[in-house]
Amino acid sequence: MSTDFPALPEDDAMPRRLGSLRLRLTVGVPLLTVLVVAVFEWSLGGYAVPADGIARTAWLVLLLSAAQLLLLEALLLRPLRRLAAGCEAMESAPVPLTPEDATPAPGLAAELDRIGHAMRRARGSLWQQDQDARELRRELTQQRLLLEQAQLALEANQRELASLARTDALTGIANPRAFDEALRREFKRAQRQRGLLALAVLDLDEFKQFNQQHGTAAGDAALQRVATLLNERLKRDTDVVARLGGEEFVALLPGFGMAEAQGVLELLREDLRALQLPDGQGRLTLSIGLAAASPAHPYLSAQALMQAADEALYVAKHAGRDRLSLAA
Ligand SMILES: Nc1nc2c(ncn2[C@@H]2O[C@H](COP(=O)(O)OP(=O)(O)OP(=O)(O)O)[C@@H](O)[C@H]2O)c(=O)[nH]1
Image (cartoon, rainbow, N blue to C red):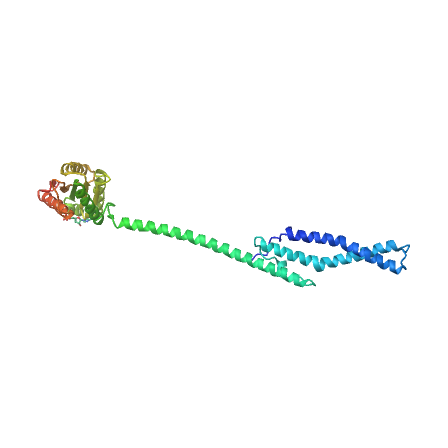
């Protein structure tokens, strides 16, 4: 601990009262001494004023007064002042123990001094406790900040994990799990609101051959471009596009009946035909099976709607691929 402590405050009420006591002693002691010495000299001179007595009496009074004042200062006033300073300091904000506080001065007024020193030690201990409490508070604030940062990082990780758990790693669009949730949710909504819900299953044609001719990396790039096209063409807030696995994709179009969905999906097929693949990779085509639920053409369940779209895709494949088939 540092010993570079601030000085004790000396200008408070109690030290001021001690100052006035010293003034009264400084005046009273010489007066009393004059009286005593004068009576003593007068009695020595046979109760007559000696001719040279005035000067000698004055010197005597001066010396005796000075000696008494010095004694009073050393034995009474100084210890009282230190005691007063200790008391005042106890009432003010704690400050560290000074080296002077740590060692009581020896002397006749040791009792007073000891009390003063005990108070200073108590004040020093209070100061130390105050410092410790401040340090603890600082550490606590720091720990709280670290905790908040860790919590934010954890929440970000959880969000990222949750997003990863619902995203297809290769294409970045929704995965089957996210799609299943969306399908169940939108199917119930369509039923409740007697609305429209179109569902399309889209499958790249002859993709196995594409992979064999151009390599898996080219196949991956082609899957990513198809996903981008889906996102660009089916971009209403309510549209959901997902990769079910392999070269199979799915699109959920709330609010669309068969005709609107067919229109937008044919545009998508045109987009794919126009897609520029790297040299020598030819072109990609899609087969699409489309089913749509409406009050006029309800489905019993989301699974039944999905199955109808799958069956339509099967028909499209068997009819020669590169086409869109509507569910019965
Ligand atoms: N590059 C790449 N290929 C994949 C991925 N997932 C599945 N495939 C390949 O996609 C091909 C799908 O082949 P098939 O199921 O026979 O379908 P297809 O060749 O497209 O034939 P049709 O669907 O009948 O037109 C297989 O060769 C798989 O290995 C993938 O993530 N990346």
